[in-house]
Length: 142
Image (cartoon, rainbow, N blue to C red; front, top):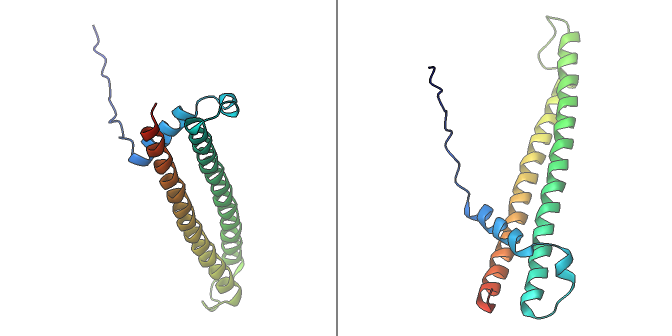
């Protein structure tokens, strides 16, 4: 009888911010329930829902921006590669067109770094807000 081997991959532990967002999503629950109801707890639920929605839209926006940067980088890199293929073998290494494309690639990388930093700062602000709202909700009761 052949024995089967089960490969168990180690589960990655969730970070505190991931747990925080999961908890916030559970609190929000159904969006239809958020419209009705008054009181401080319902008000906090609506604010949590808005913060979660802002996090989702922020991530979607930055994903699209990264995709556009990647597309632009591929285009410039292809142009650089095509230009190098067309360049004669014994041409001077300093070629203005090549340098221009390389500078564009460096600018794209700088923009990617700037966007990643801006995204991280914005996500941290929203997560701080979520933590504050969840703490307030905990103080008010379940």
